Image (cartoon, rainbow, N blue to C red; front, side):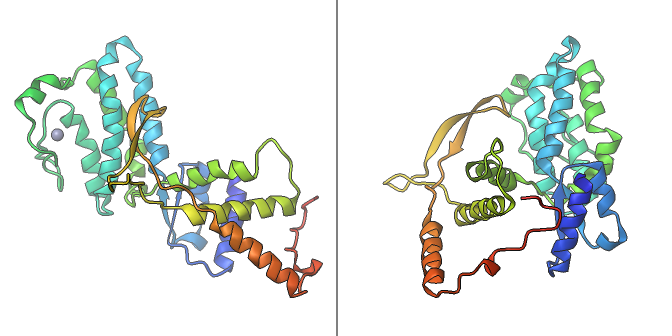
Length: 280
Ligand SMILES: [Zn+2]
């Protein structure tokens, strides 16, 4: 079902003249197969980093639950950050991305040089201070928790998928949109086709008017921050306070409605067509 809807939507965009260079999705098997069709061969299929790092964290979390692997726990968020960093800094090169990603199995053991790599020969961080050398809970190579970490990092399917992570794509903004959409179209309520369409359009206008807002500042001009509990990281984090939302689009919309009403151009024929098979 998901694959069919994806194919229909993609064909619609192409038929409307949209030149699709890249699509970021999760690692859904059906979608992967769909994008392998010859009609879509020019589209670069990337995976959403958020989904991939979430799945890695879940696997590591399960392993760390075992008593013999408890030393793995402090490294889980580091590995997720390392994946984001590797993708962001690989410059689109899948070999460099793989080498950066796999180097973490050496880094956790306090080894920061990789002679056998083609491109990534040493860690990019500054030399580790004497205090950190003793404070960081390094994982000794070959121990049970290190082997567990190695198994997740070197998983065959993950390494194979690295070429789909070179573009540093993530769907964070889309998740924000879906969350905000609930304000206009709550899931527990039924809406007619036209009602739903109008609500989606309103949500899109709201989103586009407020996307990429800058960080708010104090009267003195300093950036504003707040402390928030991150469910994902299971820890308190500093979060940027974003500028307040603007709803000027509502006024613009009302002006356009009045203008249309005054022009007497309003007729039922202006309603968008309902697709075949839609019952209401
Ligand atoms: Zn290192």
